[in-house]
Amino acid sequence: MEALYQTVKQRKRPEDVAEMILTLLEGELTQDEKRMLEKAAQGSLKKHFYAYTSMAQDFFKPIGAEKQVKKTVELFRLNNANTIDADDPVAVEAFIQEISPMIYKDMGKNHYLNDRLNKMQRQAEGMDISKRQYNKLFRRLRFMEKKLRKMNRMAQKSEYEQVAKHGLAHRLSYEEFIKDKYTACFIAYYTTRCNLRSEFTISGQQRPYDEIADMLYKKCTREQSVHQILRNHIFRKDVSAIVNTPNYKAISYVYPDPKVLAHLSDVEKGELLGQWTSVLQEIAEFLAQLWEENTINRTTMVVKRGNDSSTWNHTAGAWNKARDAWMNLIYALGLEFILDQMCFGKVLRLMAADVVAWHYRAGGKLDPNTEVWSKIPLPWEVFREKEICTRSLVKEACHNAGLDAEQSGWIAPRPHGVVAFRPTPELVHGVSVGSPFLASILRKHGYFSGKGLKKVEIEAG
Image (cartoon, rainbow, N blue to C red):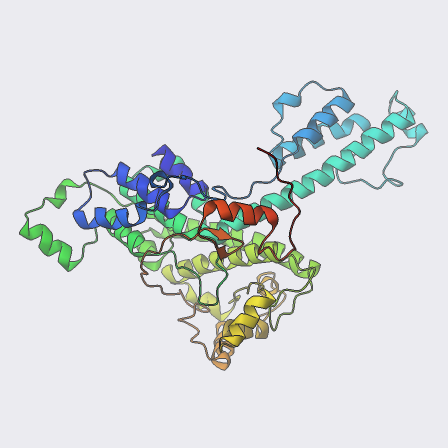
């Protein structure tokens, strides 16, 4: 179970998680269930002779401040370098707060002309160091604060990349995860499906809720089809021997579907709504910052040179994921009247110009969701209460764009179906490549990155 839990925080392929579930549930699966899992597991790395993938198995992790902390400890002549978690922004901030008073500096006051102490001020504070040494320490603390700001921004980007894919799954505790084995299997598999990378295509991305996820959900919730009930009756199969209590609270972290939320108490739904509202607030502030930093064509959402499209798209994805969960909870609690006063919209991702051109050549046109997004107030302005956006306003914009406001998820929980399992493609910047070895070579040289090819020196064997 520990290994299965770790996959929730990683980026394993669904095939590899299916292999783990087969082992974990050995002897507890029906023939149909086993056959379905084997369909995915046959593509696991364990069953391939090369046994590796060129795609990263973990989410992006921010680079810590280990080197910077060690240098600071050396300059300030401290002896606690090994006690500081240099990968944790909170610990790094506490470290800066602790040592700044040593030169009578307040954190955040970094102006080289206005915030440094002059000779008389240093003497008054009893500082027996040279001006050169004082300046060196001041610059070091200023540099550490700059590094901390970068760490915080990278941590935000990493967090939103995960939220965009699988909601709050990575925040699920191990104790909550292992309460029910079948629930754990569903969460692990569905999370890996959510974590699939985007493909370079105009036909839409893979939907995460496939036939295997549906089977695992029904198994953990004891939902059976008429066919299964008749089969169990005919063969006198004792399904009562399978004792499991669905952990709907844990499921809601990654799959806050109305049918899941219906099993939560109002208190649990309220707590979850509070979490998602806080997430929305944090994302709204970051989106506002990105909007100011980038020049984005809101009417087309085609990326332009200089746009930080990766950060924007991860953050937009996180907003939409959080908004979907928030919307589901609003309806589950019977609070949809809130939408008549505040109904913030979705945030559209930036699209590569070549994908848009491909779409038009294939007979397509501008996504109607883009038209809705461009006609209503910016979501973060609504969240900040600087603009007003109501359900009727969004509904009118959807109608004008030819969209069903409810079915498209603009003013109501978005419905979904069950899709067939499809093997995970080996991708290089969204482009499918048959061989992991070839994919690693192409990625190393910068193919399909949109940034030009890299010159890579080949080492002699």
